[in-house]
Image (cartoon, rainbow, N blue to C red):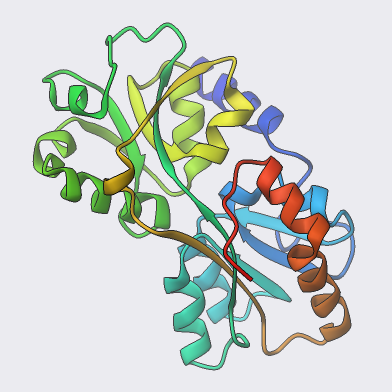
Length: 244
């Protein structure tokens, strides 16, 4: 369909050059959550990146995919892999917040998260297995509107970029994304802040894959990510920073 072609083009334009684990490029590979797509290549240009939903990447690593470093949008994935000795001890390096985005024209006249309870709203969220989907459900539960809002879900995406693209194209009336993912499409969407007291704690963790044969490169990447420059770039991209 024509809409699908446009969707692909929009996503491609929004993302910097990022190859899958089997793509061409350097031998050192970083598997990272989709919400890190814009900022990671600014922190370190040389790794070969594979961006996707954290749960998908964790499963691939568990099945032996050739990753050297794993960065997840939730501690759940890194901690499970650490428990099974598949990665080394994870380190928290960033935080984030949720926002609601709507198309720039806002055809459904949505002005707050509570408007998402209205019948007929076309809402897109993350699948419950991925961090963005889990965080969204936690927030809605805290607000006491989970059941009413979930009735309006028309699509559940496997990563946050899928949500962003559908809202930016006007294929949905609203979507829950990270505040950092709303920035690259600011000309195409409006964002609405959510009550601070209902925000779930969103923590990003990174870990070296235990089986890597490139420990020097892995340590170098970790040092860049945790360095003063790395933290500055994360902050500029809209991420929060954990206390050292």
